[in-house]
Length: 182
Image: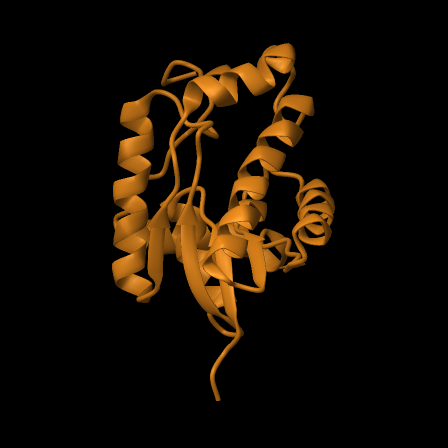
């Protein structure tokens, strides 16, 4: 029996190694790496390369979305000083989920999801609310999740270490970056 198709927004390899594996139980997953929030561009490139390693390990189709940090920065500028998990993050979720929903529609996929809820720094309730609204807007099904539950974050840490994946120490955006060795 074939599984229904799903476009999953992927933010990084450590989250993908766990969450894509979970999604693959019920869906034929296509990953979509669209993360204009990541700064600097070298960090974006590194995270993209690491996510390709997960694609090879878990055997799913992976697509790269557009990268436009200047657009992301303009969209979130009013909240650049907001704390982590603040309004800037909500806008960031919406930008990336909107891009994913539009891509799912373009590809003719009936459903989309995000793996961001693996992170303890991401608000699953907000992600799910935004995803649901965008699903209604585009006539798609948004698959809700909170992958950090039942030890999901720790499992992602263990899996990424077991596979030698790069584990970043900030969400990706310039406002969240702090010098190493904080």
